[in-house]
Image (cartoon, rainbow, N blue to C red; front, side):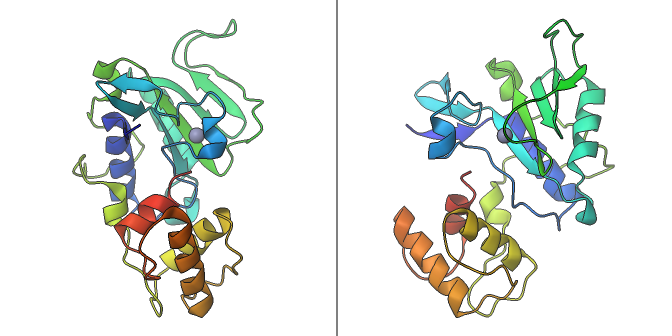
Length: 223
Ligand SMILES: [Zn+2]
């Protein structure tokens, strides 16, 4: 089934990217991979909009060194009581926008899921279209410019190929490793990285050119 991410979440991600352009995206994600798909998750496109599936969850990488502190973002969104939010998970705690488990709306409760969410925050938005597709600005705790809400994320990633010098090479290598490639995360785009990119491209049915453009980034960021 064709799917897309909820407009509210793309707006949020664009805002975070605009506020902290050098942030790592290594734990970012919208749509569920095969692993996610086998369980109930808002990363799966279970909401229907016409014949499109809509993904209503987003993960934002914790990268305080580059300003993108997932804990602070989670706190700012929670403080704003944004009416699009279903729940937020950060660092072993979950905050639901409606009263849950005897607790008041927005209270932090312990989160006992397998993944402690200490490397990324998770946000789910409500299933009503008026909520999930509202691209109004978010309160993320940064006095940032509001980015164009329709710009797709992979297009904002740098074009990388053998010899590229970019701090994103390390992120690329982490994503390749996550997708099963045997690789060292040394931050250098040499022969080993090129071979890993080609192997990954073969695996997902992309042209095996060993270069990382929007399509390869998009495939890598499915997580
Ligand atoms: Zn998540």
